[in-house]
Image (cartoon, rainbow, N blue to C red; front, top):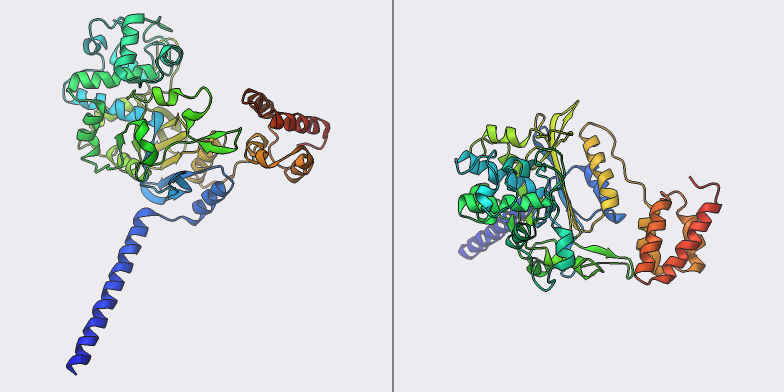
Length: 453
């Protein structure tokens, strides 16, 4: 009996451990994915059609109704794209830079009405530009990128200090007088990062880590050197499509795209990495007054237009008034293959977060609009396949012999002739004369087909 008793206990413990493990796996699954069958079917179809590769989260009235990742994060390592996968969020970074400035104002380290030169140095040549104008894109500053693409030593990484030095020494002319006109300015947000450093004694990265990321346990949010992202664990580098080889590649390996690497050292305008999970925590942070006060949020979520034209831009956010949802604050981001989007209905607490790392830019605007419609109880709409995009994907396996049948098989897609003509020129630039010739024939077929929609 004693032996049988020991066996029974052993069996009980084994079953208990199995059940515990199963429960843990269930818990992990719940944490990774929040399921909505309608949205899941929609994004699954998008992924299968090669229109989307990334992660998404949707809240309705403050309740998380959907969260899931689709596709591959790192094409070399074949790692899955998950909601906790980090990627560069591009210009969505600007709202974090603006928040750092407003937190410093809360702590009486600066005022947004201050002149920028008080923090950037007496040798900063634009004495009438205020911090507020930098935040609202009304400073009139010229863009830095054209100069650096033409003159910078591309073997070196350009940092904020290098861009600031260029403006101090070369003194490029303002595009407009400070405060008069709106002009979206990455330059301005790079200078804001330097103002954070001057006012706090910390880099923008360290300041945000201390004030936001650590308190909110945003462990997937950080600034990282571009050269280290390609083998980083649970990270989604951005990829762009090589039309010559019909494959997604590292963007800076493409012709005239080397600046994605040598301009990767500047912070403030972009370069922050985060995840869908962390952006959900960020949304929660923005509804709490414990760190970021209501008065600061009101400044961020209110347009600050220039004197001579309209603008919907606040501090780090676009703002619009929706007849159903009230005030909506949103931002998009695009850099080196990554596309990001966050939209928050401040009054109804609806939220949409979409991140993508394969530069499907032609479809993402329609996808965003469809998800916004879904939250208004409208049916989801799949984007119509564009001929220019499908041709790029299929062309390496096509020939003049198969072209006519390919056209017949896809007659009901969007035959975007203007983009097909642009693509034809792109093929010429990269020496893909066979694809250029196929497009010439295809365009003639299109023009001759009177039944074309």
